Every structure is written in structure tokens, then in C-alpha cells.
Length: 404
Image (cartoon, rainbow, N blue to C red):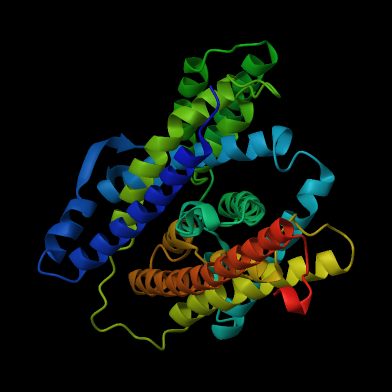
């Protein structure tokens, strides 16, 4: 059954608002009399001992457990777009890939410049490089029917490519000591899942069992466990052009749980930072905020402009430069991924993690406000132009002065 575009638009808008609300609640709890209870719940140890990490806290289960499902959904989306969607051809990949690459490199460079290449702080270079798909699309969805579909398509595609880069960074940079035995077991599990695909296994439950096993041994190996989600997604059958393939069924089934459950929970668990006594001159805070707010829009919009002007890619249909700029600014909403990477970057420095959170929230908020304002104003202009164009068509083009 075909999805209702207006229903999907309403879901995206509500998901973005729900994520904002969860972050706001976390900030209130962390800066109120409920602060102790809030942190006590997140720090509570639950469940059996797990390999490499022992008994995990509630926060750990959310960031390493539930977020693995988030990354599973990201992996499914990336695979579908790559083989059967907006990234299916080299021409379609060129503009979002160049824009996403520049949009990751420039914020990282700004962060490193602000922090003075301080060795103790350099691990945070990737924090402002991420784009939060749900928040960015949610902000765009607030425009309703006035949002340009071509601009939304480019924004989502850049964010998808951005997520590919973020996953690679997490896998290569933010890992602990590795266990060769666990990695070998992961390889066997992954090969078994790939073989199921090759031999035509279409039921989802064997792949889900494989995903759970892969997550367990990924946790034991020292590679961040969320990477299991992306790797598992790559083995699930897509069926090009097939509306009810295993991949599309799983993606459709996971989407509401991730958007309306896992992501708000992560926002509630991760955005709670105490604002009292914050050092606003902390270079980590400034570097991340500047990287997200300035670096993203400079990198993304600059790359789009140069690529199109050089003739290496086509400008999206019916997209105005002001709309492309507004979408580039929205790419500075790093929230979920930036908070996630921030916790990985400074595991032994709570003060820097808190500074990273505030920098992320500041840069993301500024990007959301400016990006929405630019697109809101542009949407009014576009609507006025459309009305003028329609009027010219009705009245037969330009009229003589004596008839006006």
C-alpha cells in the first residue's frame, strides 16, 4: 500500500517536535530539584553482566542498545537509497556526496582551529560534523505544504550521506581495545547473514536473531555496538522495485518505534546538562557550536554553489538559492549524532562531555532558528511569485498600462 505523503509529513513534523520536547524536559530536569533523581535513574545498573562493559546503566542501554536499532534503521535507509532511491546513480550521488563531505570537513576544521589543536581535545573533532535527520526534517516539516520538495529531498539525502560518514568515523575512531576472538565471531555471523540473503531467505526473524548476536559480540569486541545495526542492515534483502521486500517491511515497521520512542528517549537521556556554573569560554563548547552553526552552512552551501557553478552537478529542480542556503543552515542541527559522538569522544572527562552537550545544543538551536527563518521567508516569496505567475496566466501575460 502506498504511503500518504501528507501523513508522512505530519509524522515527521510530530517526531521533530517530540524530540525537541524531550530535550527541553531533560534540560529542565537537570537544572531543577529533580536533578538528583534524573541522574540516579540514568545511572542505575540493570540487566545481566555484559562482555567488555559489565552491568550496564540505563543510559548505557539507551546509547548502546536502543541506539543500535536506530542505526539499523539508518542502515536500511542508506541501503534502500543507494540501490533503489535517491543515491542509485552516480549523477544523483554527486551533489549530496560533495556537500556532505564539505559539511563534515569544514566544521571539523573550525573545531580544531578553535581548540588550538590541543591534543587532549582533538578527539572531539567529529562532534560538529554530524547532521540530525529527524530534527532537520522536522524543522523543514514545520513549513508544511510550503516546503519545497526538491529542497527537502536534497536535505534528507545530504543527511543520509552524512550518517554514512558518521558511522564510519564511529567504527574507525571511537573504539576501545579490540578482541580478535569477538571480531572473528562477528565476521562469521555477518557471513551467515549474507549467505541467508544469497540463498533467498525472506523471513525477517533469522536476520533479527543475527542482528542481536552481532550486537552482543560487537559489544564484546570493543567496536562500538551500534555499528552492528548498520552491518546487519546491509545483509537484509532489498528487492529492487519490490514494495514489500524484507528490507522495506522492516524499515516501515521500525520507523515509528525509532522516531517516536527511541530518539525521544535518547534525547531525554542525553540532553540533560546542568547549566549552572558553565564555562562559556570552554573551547570545546565554542568549537562545537561554531562548527555546527558556521561550519555546516559554509561547508554545505559552499560545496553546493561550487559544484553547480562548475557544472559538475545540476541545481535541484525549482530550488532557489535562498532555499538551498536555508537547507544548508539546517544541516547544522547535529543533536542526536553530535550528542552521541560527544559521549564517545571524552569517555574519561565528564566536564568536556557536558561542554560538548551545551555546544551541541547551542549550535543546533541557532541552526534551527536561522534555517527555519530563511526558509519561512523564502516560502512566502515563492508563494507570492507563484500567485503572480498564476495571475499572469489567467489574464494573458503583461497588460497594457491603460488596462491595468
